[in-house]
Length: 206
Ligand SMILES: NC(=O)c1ccc[n+]([C@@H]2O[C@H](COP(=O)([O-])OP(=O)(O)OC[C@H]3O[C@@H](n4cnc5c(N)ncnc54)[C@H](OP(=O)(O)O)[C@@H]3O)[C@@H](O)[C@H]2O)c1
Image (tube, rainbow, N blue to C red; front, side, top):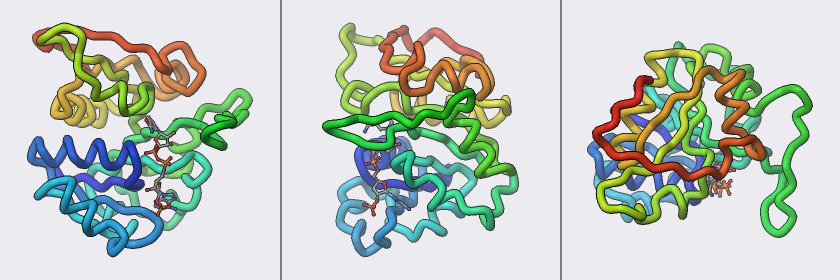
């Protein structure tokens, strides 16, 4: 699958490395241009190339891995999403250490805001509920898989994300659409930060 990743820090790098290792073609981008990422891209694997933001956006699957405060810089109105899958990995921090301030969205939710910023995209929330160092830490029991929650309004788009999560050696569990599932997965909500495990032979419908 051809995948664009917006953001080349902890999440962008971890997903690029694992998805490329599974055979996907990954274009990774940041705000400073591909030259700033060439060496990193080589370290991340044979199937990873550094690109402009526009090149990362020009893929059937795009992973959003930028700070919440930057999503409007990336998801600009002129992007033609044409039903492409947009995976929202963001958490609604307005600042990181040491303050770790969280945006006050009132009755709104982060993933629904993302969906409004990318109205013709099929938005799926995933890869946000655990810190990367936990997400890809060794499992406590041989053969177990760590659960990652998935929320989205489109069945086929969720199925695509299930495959990418499984290819990352994690276990996808869909919990509904953005309005309910996305809220449950949001920073500060009940499923944020929770670790669950299952055995890989358990199938979970997208
Ligand atoms: N860290 C984790 O363990 C973790 C886990 C789950 C979810 N998340 C969420 O995932 C997102 C990414 O987190 P992170 O820790 O990997 O990194 P981050 O510090 O939130 O994001 C930094 C990355 O975003 C890029 N970026 C910023 N503005 C951009 C723009 N306008 N266009 C393109 N790229 C831009 C930066 O590139 P430049 O250096 O060029 O600015 C850098 O590569 C965040 O929303 C975070 O809350 C993080």
